[in-house]
Image (cartoon, rainbow, N blue to C red):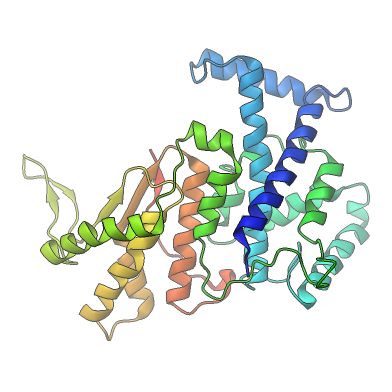
Length: 336
């Protein structure tokens, strides 16, 4: 099980090491293209009036975002691997899955085409594979800050990142951090993004709503709205009578972040559908529920986390245990 406080403390220490590596490589003669690219990106941001920061402050902020993205990508991968949502494991996993992951690492470098590659390319190959899975494109694709400049992180730092997630507790002989969770509770993934990256927290005003506050608000907003309008709410029309939105109940979080309110709404709306139409196929009811749940945010990585969390909630409701078996559910959270 996940020990959240110990995990956060250890990841913050790891984050600082990755930040130091990225900072050194911004001016390293070994990778001059890194510094050139960063200067060019900063100038683009200045010209487009997307930033008023000095180059140093802009760079510090960007370094933290990229370092956090590398760490969080590994956390998401481990969560999927430890809960057997994907096979085979390539980072680690409890029991025999750690040995399987190590075997996958060995096989990767036995390929003659990979002879000159490093652990950085191994991790990128892992993430590229995950990007092909449902909702994986959001988490590991273009919205992920690490993909802006994949060779920015040094090979040695990537190796340290890999070893961190394979670290064994010397007292127990088992993995130091086990992400196994029979309930697939993903709330910590959203909280971790806020707590790990101070730069992201400040830039996007991330502040997760506590459980009890979330439940209190949903009790007094979502449930009364469902009682008043019902699941088959009439279409929304403009003053001219033109239909603006089709019939059906809809809720929206206009600043949804990593999706706590969206995830809190999911079981409540699904329960209403199950009571209203108990004989229907559960996948149909899940999609009807997802049709009702909307959220927007300016942070693309937070949206990716929210969509991933909603997908896992949908799979759990359908008793689907592998991401590769996921139906093509339509998910509404998006950017604004």
